[in-house]
Image 1 (cartoon, rainbow, N blue to C red):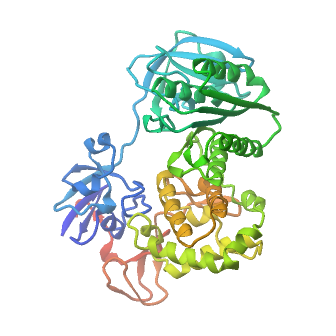
Image 2 (tube, rainbow, N blue to C red):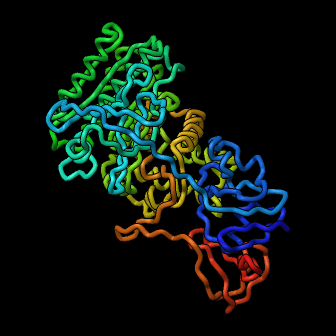
Image 3 (cartoon, rainbow, N blue to C red):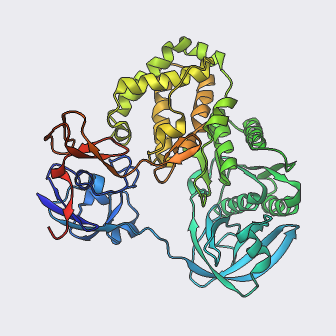
Length: 520
């Protein structure tokens, strides 16, 4: 056996188990999700010992250099001394060089950085307020053209950071920021495809920056910009788009509309669908690249509209800003707003083809090394039956599904946008193989896309119970009501004795499997 040291405990690791499994068996409370190296939730840092090359595969080089690894796929040939992951970014100092009022409530900041930074439009920075608050702001300047890093900031009444940036911070003062962050940027690989930029409000200048970077990089395809904005930021939007159009008037097209302050998220979806319809009149939608970034409501709407219209997922470049606080799940209003689709239900043979698709899909999921770990202790037939009941309820309008809603069904799973897209691509393959007419595939895909925000997350969340989020993590000591077997070592555990149960997985471990003090 090998010894694993972490947080004052020492666990004996068997040769056939991963570092994560040994820690969990030993009662060490560490975060985890997929258990197969996909989500990186369980990252730890090796202070002594070699965790093995497989455990660092796919990690950023800076993380590997600092000793980070994935314990769920680590089976080292020796002892390890571990420490918690250290994923903090090092902020850099910026000096406010200029502040210019573009229109009431909107200012342009030009910043000089004390540390060299390479950025491209579509990325953003996180500004640190002296009081500790952190907020994301889109970069609107093009690094190769502009000396200053430029931000557009809209004043939010009562907003701590926006009020400070627009009114309180003096020219010449410095502050800290992180970045550049984000990947919703133009790539030379998209140079021959028409480019559709869709955005809203104060995020539009950043989209114009993406367009400028594309033209500067030799983009040969058409550039179509479709936006919506409240009237009070019209001047900032108009000026930034006008400069983009002026750079290539024969290549860039621009459509925009003004929205009232009272209009809800529906306006974003209507705008995105209108943008897809306009793009379709210029070239087949399968040939477009769609780019959006900014507030999560806008990004969600653009993604739904693009998937629904048939834009390939590989050419949808969309990234919402990370929220300072976890977003509240919207399962209830989303489910309530879904109308039955009798045409799709009929095309699915009143459920016959739906079950065929699900049997094929989950058969492949349970053999997929990235997706199978999320179905630990769940039989394939149960997964098929639950998904069938959920989709039948929505497509047919039966409204007799009483299972978990999307957020609660996935609350503990750490799933990235990339992994979500991987899952959806696999699902779409199964749908096409079953022969569903093309006209219905986008409608089905858009329904899945509607719940991306409830499923994608960078850390485990608790279940929503009576309107409150309850996180079931860690261990609880349980007195056994009946004889059972330890999930760690297979030893028989007698009724009346104590065991340690992991609150989320339900795994039960005997006393011999629990970690010992480091001086034992």
